Length: 448
Image 1 (cartoon, rainbow, N blue to C red):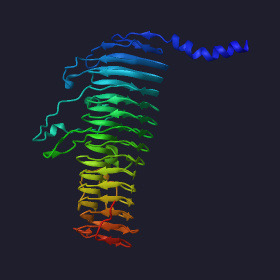
Image 2: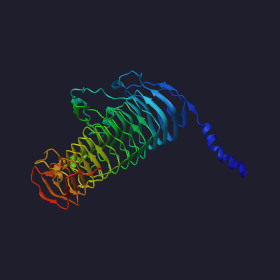
Image 3: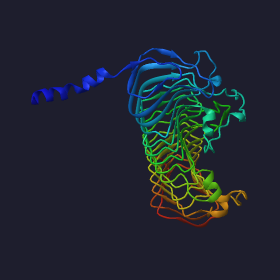
Image 4: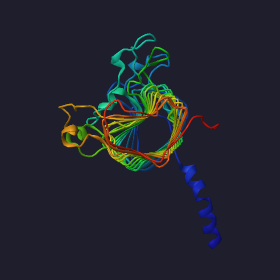
């Protein structure tokens, strides 16, 4: 009897696998149990407010077996695509090996705890027609992600849109030829890794009021618009990664987001601008490649964050940190940018052990004379440029290593190394208590 029970235990996974049903898809189908999808191409077109199929329940595993849902003919214009292919709600749901193209949204999930999306391909869904041409930019192409309290981001479409999902996992997925690959709003403690989100016209990954997530080892290159080589380079607020409106304590590590409008674009949010409180704080941005951005490799504004060990080549600004405070910028390699690090109205920021090579300006700190009168932030917060620490950095072939203006209590010490420059320190406007101690200046850069 004991051997019989052991044998039954050994073979029980095979018995369960054999019992997993295989079903075909039809428009309006509701799936409420684990199953495999009969693999073929399903032409399921849906109108603007319609859904192709719905997955609902708990403890489900749905294996699409590389089944493809097709919402429109392959020659349909992408700005005319409508509807949602797959809607998900419930708990502990795994969706794998699905394909969907020709929709406004390929997969929409709301209030799902422990959702797993694995090895899915949601390429060639909605993207709008751009009105900019090679010779001139059309400003109607600029994006605005400032509000998403009522899912305003959905107007842009998305391969995957996750709303109020706890601990979602997105891994091994592919999205190209859309405007947005993955948008997450109100999603916490998620894991997004080993995905391939490239050549989209808006965002690779976008977070809104989403905290505690890990975005790691993703390929997010060429998510860009508003760039025409030698004519204009704007970015138009496209980005490899977007963090907006109180998205905090996220880890962004080991991603490649090159040739994007911004490599990473972070903004505290309208609530911070109105009240002066909160922000997209305490995010750790580590070990990424954000090179070749037409605008900013990294933009972090009105917030407190750690930026460490990233590569930023040939961007207009390597790091733009307007109104950043208590931000720690360490160990980054910033090369051939117009400005390596630019911080306007920053407070208590630390710039330590970075390498600048071939930049026009290495570090620029400054403040404007006046603040906008309609900014609640400026009325409620100290917005002086003050108390920066510039410590143990290396400047190689950087034309102007330092440009500091209208700033207070800036310490340039700890043996910064300066090689081959035109102007070591430019100060267009007076500074108060500028400390320049224990630095070393050389005429010839070392071979590296």
